[in-house]
Image (cartoon, rainbow, N blue to C red; front, side, top):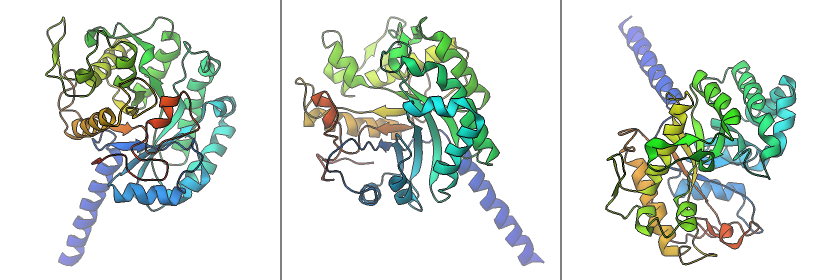
Length: 345
């Protein structure tokens, strides 16, 4: 009887650990984005091996590539799986379509550790190349959420969408951040959906672009995490631009009724070539290593101190089929899988 009781208690303890692991949607470990717009990239199996060799335990992919999903099976790498923008209309059109998408791309891969489904990437009413998708994001979110819930996976997989910081205006000081009036009818219902389902908002945050577009007012050191910091007009000290952009988005979320919504940084990185003097291997090494150290350190931001910042570094590999030229050079590794510089996860 004592042995049986001990076994029972051990089982309960194990279940408790599993529940904690299942519900941990704000872990600090950095992951990578794995894009495949390259002409001579390693096989998905080799990519998984590369991640394992470098202690990379989280990954984002942008579409349900079957070879990649097969390679990830049993790898213990947690995954953000994307619903590509061109697929949003079909998934939004009916629950049956969403059920089929989840069956084909999630349920058929029981050995893959799905963490989030990203329903669309950087859809915005402000962008001519994505504005046609804005009406599909919320119904697609709802249908994928229903399909995930019906599959009994709602406690394991959260459903969200990935947005860019261009939706936020008045971002300085960060406490003034607000979603642009031109996007509020699009983003506010999404924020309410996320809040009601305890799901994070995925946000692509790029100090690289902010600095590149405004080098007269933003110092390179502030963008690279090497500044001593600045004091904003409301008296808050920011050590780096990443935290400022993140907190501006948190302020916008709060004003949209999403104060309970956490942010997962679904992309952040620095180009190593192909542009102006800011695109260098030295700057990319400095930014990406400092980024990983920062988000893994659990220091949080001035607005959310002590909170983990789950972040996905863009990009794992260089992608030579992208444009303009600097977009080809965001990889931590060359297209052949060789490292550009030392990087530690």
